[in-house]
Image 1 (tube, helix red, strand yellow):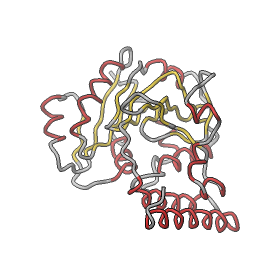
Image 2: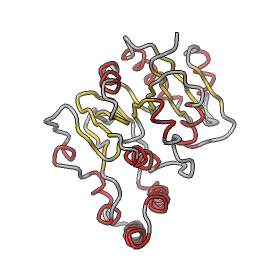
Image 3: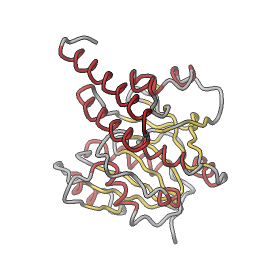
Image 4: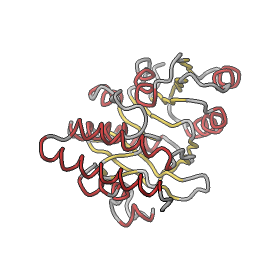
Length: 270
C-alpha cells in the first residue's frame, strides 16, 4: 500500500537523538500509513549501525558526503512514495498526534506548508516563524521573529496563523508543492534555506500556516559561533530575491549588522 505520509529526516552525527525522535514518531503516527526515510550525511558516529539494528523498517540512505540540510532533503524526497511530506530534524521529539495536522493540510488546497509550536528541552516556547527579510530586520535580526506580541511570548489566541516563513525543523507539505518549487535551493548549505524555501512557496501563491496547538521539542543547535553561517545564508537570500536599489540597501543593512556583531565579539560585548 502506498503510504500517506513520507517522513524525511536528515541526520549528521545525531546518534544521541535518534531513538527519542523515532519513538515519538511511532507514538504519534497513529491513523497515518507512513514511511520514514533517513538520509545520513556521512556521520562519524554510529548512527547508521544503530538504525540498522534498532529501526530496521526505517529506509536508510547512507551518503558518502555531507550534503548539508537542503540537498540532503532533496535526495531523500527523490525516493519518497507518499503524496505528503514531513521534513523533521533529527534532534526533535513530537509531542502530539500528527493526524490532525495532516488532515488540516489535505483539506485546504491553498496551504503550501504547515509548522507547529516549537519548545526547547525544558518545554519552554521557542519562536518558530518569522518575517521575510527587509531593511529593518537585516539591520537588527531579532526583528525577523517579531511578528506580533503573541509570537514574542508564545501565548496564542487563535488555532492557526498565516506567517511568512517557518523553521525547517518541522515542515509538513504536499509532495507536489515540494516538487513544484524544485525542493531546497542547494546553494545554501546550512541556515536560511528554510526562509528561501518558504519565500518560493509564497511566490507560487500558497500559504504558510502555523498551528500553535500542536507541539514538538527541538534541541536547538544554534549558537553565536554560527553567526557567520547565518550571515552568509542571508547574503545568498538577498542575491536571489532582491534587485536594483532594494538589493543594494538591504545588502548594506546586512553588512552593518555583521560589522556590529564582529565588534561585539571582539570587545566581548553582549
